[in-house]
Length: 125
Image: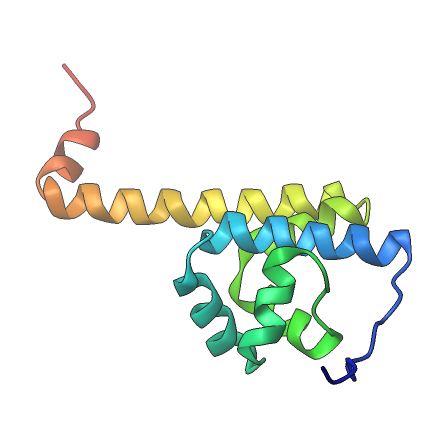
């Protein structure tokens, strides 16, 4: 049998903790299926093997891949803000998302009940 020629990269506790955070965020955002691997590959341009390592929590994405993950995944951004102690920025992000959902809901209701705007402006007797 031939000797193993791959490199063993030693990681410290902080690197493994960061890899675990990324694995949790990606699994939460994309799910545990093979489709998650394909989506993350498409987002980042990373190899299948790299993405599988990220999902397993054995390695973390490099900076360029991390930027693409943040760009596409609110869950990754949310976990990074929590891990970095920036809950204030997280609250601003969540308020922005809620505001967007509220506008979408109001637009849906306006389509569903087009005459409701005249009811809302009724001042009463």
